[in-house]
Image (cartoon, rainbow, N blue to C red; front, side, top):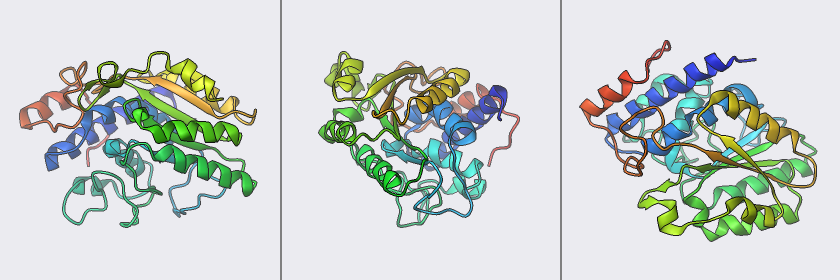
Length: 281
């Protein structure tokens, strides 16, 4: 078992990776990536049953994770590298010519840990439901995990998928929605507010839980609670409250860092706020 302190150290290093990756290529999406670093760390380094090598696309007898909001690829790439899917040094190629680490995850480069191309918002949950149904058909007791953004759920396909999952009793599926209240054009409440999201999702036949996504101990306990609710006839949705840009003071509290890379001075300031005992790539 990994301690909370160890997970927090890993999450801090993943935040450093995110910032350095986005800065080096002068493009990418640091805001949501930083906000989800604790969740991805808890999932890959403590909660999820997965095997980095040999990497198998069908993941029989393993959990599966699908990143639906694929623009936050830096946080996933860092977690994959640091949990052994590929060399950590490859993070330096992010968004560069001929890199396997594209801005949005893609499968044709055969990057270990990536099972679907994602970033076309609204699609990942449908894939996750299909994978969950396949595991049932294969008598595989493992879990399918999916992460969506709260801006992403403005896509109609999400709601079709929510309805399909409950109708088909996909009770081996855990969807987490990153509720940071921000999207590329502003606050979600101003773009297309969703009012009582809990009641909406419950009305589609899901069990809904809530979790603080930037406090590691609560993330781990929240994910384990969700696991305890499985196999009871309903898919599980976690509404995870995070802060976009978490860990970097000048990136927090605004949508402006959704898709903007820090300059040299901003990078130095951000990294100074995230001291780590681990090594940068």
